[in-house]
Image 1 (cartoon, rainbow, N blue to C red):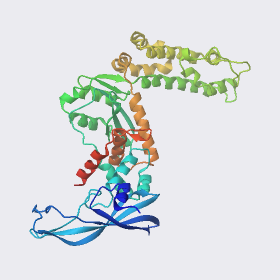
Image 2 (cartoon, rainbow, N blue to C red):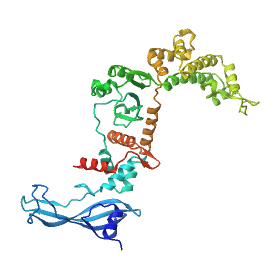
Image 3 (cartoon, helix red, strand yellow):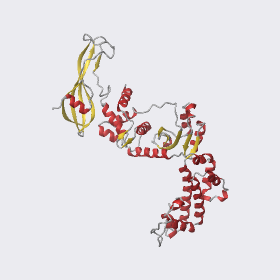
Length: 442
């Protein structure tokens, strides 16, 4: 027969004053619980209200009260401890108080082990409703525990390399767009801002002292003009770098639009139309990466052809596409080789010598010339922040959306702090987190 010490050790109950009296099964709201009966009593050393030392029976027992404490599942059944807590009476101040236990916070029925388990589950890609069902608590309780993990940020530090990008946020946020600030050196999300409008961002960064803002040396962003204007104002020592991907994407979209416009001029049943539609990726690729050695069977071609042969056919049939393609490949070559001189020559090209489809894009790049050139000088991109945004979208999709931005941000920052790798959560220290939860509850 197991002793009281064995039962408490298996359940992780670290309280020598707790005595287990028995167990039973009980059906509560359609769920079968394992119910343990226990008793908590000890001799208090002093009164918590007046501080008098318990000598000469100044503190006496004064009845008891049965409370419910929820634990993690045992053999797939949720566990409840019905413990009879001793009540004490102080003769000196004539006040009463209850026996305390470290397994649960005062005024709470959810044990600290359950809270730790909920936090660990919040670090995984699970919905909050699923976490609530697994621990037999309400989603509101999960949200309340999530908010206890919120980080108190100090306004005295900004990362040396700051990356800025926006993502689709909750509906309660104005314009439904929030901002992701990522530290490229540290490889983690620095902060999440609710609003991407310049006025809000200006107020946020101005809340940091000038010494902290001077620490920022590089700012990477897309071609969203308010971000660039903001960085120029709040970061005096920073070099602004426009992301390479967005630079190339600007011209890629225009070339693809030209291909679509050429298709609209053709009969949908014609061979040229079908070739332009089926092999739409080939003109967008770098020409030095196309396969010219291996031949294979392609639809709409009688003989064995390679990717280069298909491209030559397309460019031979459509002169406008060929002119734009040559310009596009020169631009890709300058970006791939980080050739600043070649890029400057392209930007300095006369407007009448630029293909019609690219004139607007080149005009945009000329306005951002300094920051576009910086993308070739410095090896910093928005690739990491785009990956973080993708992870945020996964969290939102798995959770079927969020109503509260505060909960959404707290979940993102918690998962970012405690990264999960092969089932182990690194940098997670349960003792420190328990003390954090207790300090919040007090």
